[in-house]
Image 1 (cartoon, helix red, strand yellow):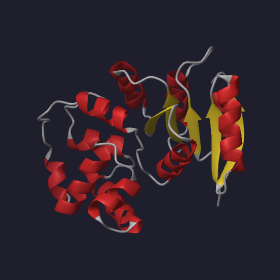
Image 2 (spheres, helix red, strand yellow):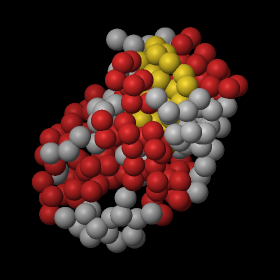
Image 3 (tube, helix red, strand yellow):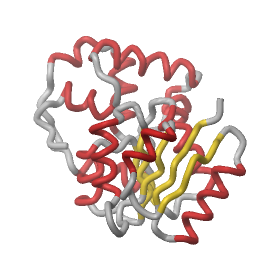
Image 4 (cartoon, one colour):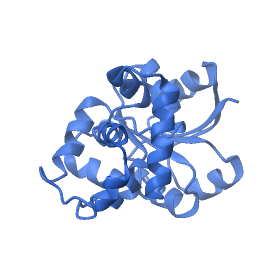
Length: 211
């Protein structure tokens, strides 16, 4: 089945470009594209997208507030932040609000599609510069929770790569395993930790980290 997508972007040219990219690409279906999040709750309730591609700075209800609304009412919907911002404050806000991924607007079109696909299958796509910013948010030697001992050495390795911003495909390439093997590892990690996302896994294992 096609991955269904809603876009929130206030720049008309970019909104139309993203709309064309998604609607014309095999395996994707565009459900709607809007200039702000003023009616985000109604949009999600009616259209039921798999993935929301979200800008941050918009007039009216902005992306961070829209993300909070989605997280409160539609926890199953994946939200991929698409923004020009690379500063820690913006990254911190988006992650704390529950973003599933965070990529820059200058990301090439094919990489945007790959990020949408990745976040839909449970990944946490981030451009490399954003991943570095995320790492800067955490202490160098975080408190360790015994929960991590429930994971095998390979599962711990996979989880660390997720935390570092690796996509499923990047993890598969680095570990030289099949993509389905990575998905199996991540499914087992989530089952063992009783979580549903990498964000929840970080909070479970490293409760002292401020997200």
